[in-house]
Amino acid sequence: MHIPDNYLSPSTCAVMGTAMIPVWAMAVRKVKKEIPKEKMPLLGIGAAFSFLLMMFNVPIPGGTTAHAIGATLLAVLLGPWPAAISITIALLIQALLFGDGGILAFGANCFNMAFVAPFVGYFVYKFIKERVSAGKGEYFGIAAGSYIGINMAALCAAIEFGVQPLFFKNAAGLPLYSPYPLSVSIPAMMISHLAVAGVVEAIFTVAIYAFIKRVSPGMVYEGAKQRIKPVYAIIFALICLSPLGLLAAGTAWGEWGLEDIKNVVTGGKSLGFIPEGIKNGFNFNGLFPDYAIKGVPDIAGYILSALAGAAILIIIFKIVSAFKKGKPANI
Image (cartoon, rainbow, N blue to C red; front, side, top):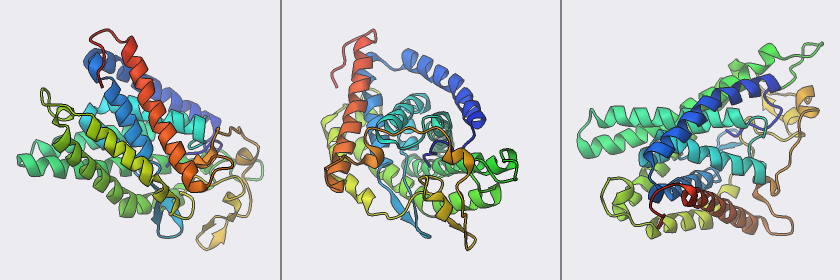
């Protein structure tokens, strides 16, 4: 679901980035007002969870892949506004360091994964929890919220892809950016997420939430005991298991490389060309593209990338916490 650069027109990217400005502004205000200094590092832990879950690619029938986001998990644990900040920073680190998601498309990726997914997931969770008996309602709400949240994010991405050939064509009538119309992009994105990615998101979310609730109830209930070491243990386990994401062969739909797109087969036919906007557009290479480190075996590189990304995110929010007024953080 990480949209690369040049698959959306610059004007589309500008619109999506502009749409995120009030979301980021409100999220920052909410976090400043509602998150005490001692809990600020929890946003880094949440960002690390999201970053790592997005590294676990799962195979999709047809040869593509997809991944979880952890958006509803963060929204339930932290609140939807803090979740938006955590996922935004995770996406920024992915784009800058690992080339996962475009720089120009950053606003669009944040709109889908840092805004739509956590907010939809959270409100579905709240709606169900308030109407179903305590224990069952909580977990059913989390499962349903995470499933619906990621699928709504996928639908938004599909629409962003699908409107490109409607509005942006060259003189010969060929698409300049994403070449697939809504009739292709929506089924391609939604079938994979409805059938596989949504289920994976729900399983990850419920499992991690249940574990955190048991070992560190203070992250769920106000005033309860908060134990962070077991939570760090989950993060460490995810880092060690991250190479499982390498087992999924293929590329996620819409995340093709420059030379891959002309060979993408849709409806039994390959595209056969590279759209001009993709071929001649903005180019940015992360320091460690595709979570690979030059001269290091793929598995080791993936683990080191996971470790570096998670550590950077945790450190960023600890630094932010140090500058926030209030009691010093002890997490």
